[in-house]
Length: 146
Length: 146
Image 1 (tube, rainbow over the protein chains, first blue to last red):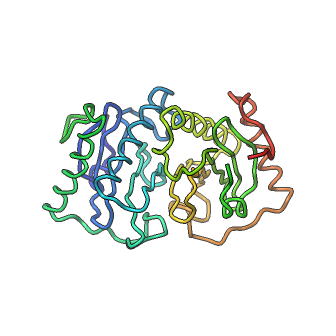
Image 2: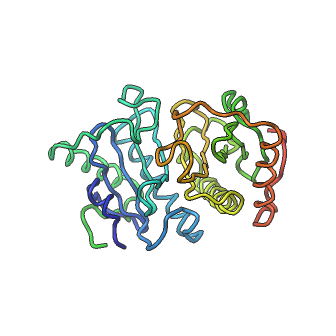
């Protein structure tokens, strides 16, 4: 699968699940992760076959649980929008009542604050560690070929 | 299940799937539907058991397919946000490149335009008809007890 150029530019690759790449959005305002199912020419969830859509749901739930453990937060916002980037991708954003955009959605509210490398690495390590305590035998950390 | 007062105020009940109520948001700007899993005290998807989350995925995909057939559109936005209403609910919004908010998400952009009764009824009938041509033997049209 070829990752959409905009996602490749805006995000870091954290690792991958059996179906989806896990990306970290380069915006330090929120712990903001994205699942990208590794399938060609898919723009909406219902285009996946049922087994794949169930796998995506499992990966999404596993990620949401791990995000809650790693980052706390008051809410996980889960969304497949794709008005700008056509390739199917599912946002998972940890929201806090104290964050910049609360209670509004985050998209288009503020310019992103790019991570400094140390904070980015810590953020990626936190989610990887939280995933590794779960059914994360299927989660492979780090950049992989795709 | 008790429907959250805000959802009851903002929406019309279209019918229900085995797991979820199907609501129509009272905003004629967009064909905007909402699935509410009929489970008590659930605020995020990962709190459902795996079988229920797979069922929610199936209902979501079925609805998205039916929305595309009934309303066309350029994109379906699917999102579980819940920053304002805690009860788990999953938005399904048909988006057009020509709609008021495109390409931004719809939440908080504009005041809703309430439906006039005839257009509302037509909108509800269109989605019910599209669902009825699918695996919609499980979709029950109309207000039901919950």
